Every structure is written in structure tokens, then in C-alpha cells.
Amino acid sequence: MRSIFKGSIVALITPFRKNGSIDHGLVRELVEWHIASGTDAIVPCATTGESPTLSHDEHDEVIATVVKAVNKRIPVLAGCGSNCTEESLRLIKHAESVGADGALVITPYYNKPTQEGMLAHYESLASATKLPIVIYNVPGRTGVNIKPETVAKLAKIENIVGIKEASGSLDQASEIMRSTDLDVLSGEDSLNFPLMAIGAVGVISVVANVVPDLVAKLADAAQNGDMEEGRRLHKLLFPLSKALFAETNPCPVKAAMAMLGKCENVLRLPLVPVRKDTEELIRKALADLGAL
Image 1 (cartoon, rainbow, N blue to C red):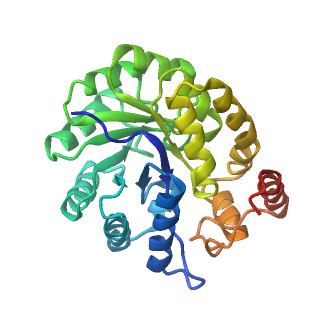
Image 2 (cartoon, helix red, strand yellow):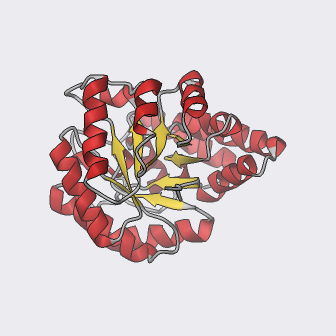
């Protein structure tokens, strides 16, 4: 099965109203903005979408809103991760039922499964759906790292089509590229260009929430082999990439989006708005890009 998830893929924020409810009208507006800005695919309800604080019904509703708003113009890769295999399967089945194009599935967090446990987790999910599955590896948040040899075993399963690599290790990404035919997607914005330079086919980006046109141009440059332009955009975006991870994601990106007038700076506890010094760091990065 060939993956359709390439280029600039935004890890979409979930906009909340001041009372904490989800603003579905704003979700639809953000979808239109991304499509007009050259974003190649959308990931709703991942970490950046504050999935841990969404109820099951809210999670389902956001996925359905995004799928309907996109209306098959670009692919939708639904966030379907959980530390419970049964819960992840429920999310995948719902995403499949409303017309999502694939499922992004994080390695199970907190319960810290062994490599054998992660292998069994993904095998079980893949066997129960026809949706393409993209593995998501982010050890800094989950406490576990899915090793390249485990990924190589999973790559033999037809509907496991890619991996979002956010280990921060170019060596690990290189080994996955060397030993499998999976599509590797950068999951760390400051490494988007370096990872694409060694063979990643795209990025799943937090920064793309804020400057979708620039991230799309960077992905296009890398895909087209325009290394000079890719390096220029990498250097241009690097300060913002670092600023948006100065505190726990998605707190900084929510602050940035509020500065741009794209959403309210509202998060759900235990996440809180960024500190003043972080806010100023973000504001400066946006100003330097001419985004304000």
C-alpha cells in the first residue's frame, strides 16, 4: 500500500472558546486557511490538538468536523493513539467510519510496553482495519522508543505505511530508511529539513499551524532537491521552531496563534498559558518572520 501522506502535514490545534468548549466553526476556518496556504495533509486530534484532554465524544466530533470540512481535497490523517490497544482501535474504527484517509498511532505511553508489546499493539490494530497506519515515535513524551528493528518487522504489514519520527536521532531515522520502505515523516520541526535531506518524504509540523505557507515551501524545496532554498527556509524557520517548543507543546503554539488572531489562547488543565518570557520569545520570532 502506497502512502499518500507526504509534504507539509499540519498537526492541527484544537481551538477552544473562552468557556473551554471546542470552536468547530474555527476548526473549519483553519482547514480552509491550511488548504489555501499549501498544506498537503491535516492531522486532527494528535498531541498538538490536545487529544489527552478531549472526551471520547469530542475526539470523534473533531475528526468528523475536519474530514467533512476537508471534503477529500487533501488527506486527513486522524490522531488515533492511546496507551490502550482497545481504545486506539475504537478511535481508528470511528475515523474509518467518517472517511478519514489514515490513522496516526502513537506508541503506547505511560505503561511503557516492551518492543514485543509494541509489535503486538500495532499488529493487532493493523489486522482490524483497512486504513493506512502511520506509527508515531516520540520517546520524550511516551517514555518508550520503538527501535528500528521493531519498525522493520512492522514494515512488512501492508497497511502500515509510514512513521512519524520524533526521537531526535538522525541515526535512528537513517536506519529505518535503510532497512524498510516505510515513508519517514519528520516529527520534530527543528529537524524538518535535515530529515528530508536524508530521505524523509515530509513533515508533521507544529510550526505549520502558524506559518503554513513557509513550511509548505520548505517541504516542496526538499522534495524537489532545491537544497539551497531548503537551507534558507530552515534557517529562517529555526528560531520559531525552537520558540514553539520552549515550553510543553501545544502551549506555545496556542500563544502564537492567539497573537495572529487565529484562536483564543485557551488550553485545558493541566496545560496553562506560557510564561511572559516565553511569550516574548514567540512574539520576537513571529516579528522576525514578518508574521505579525
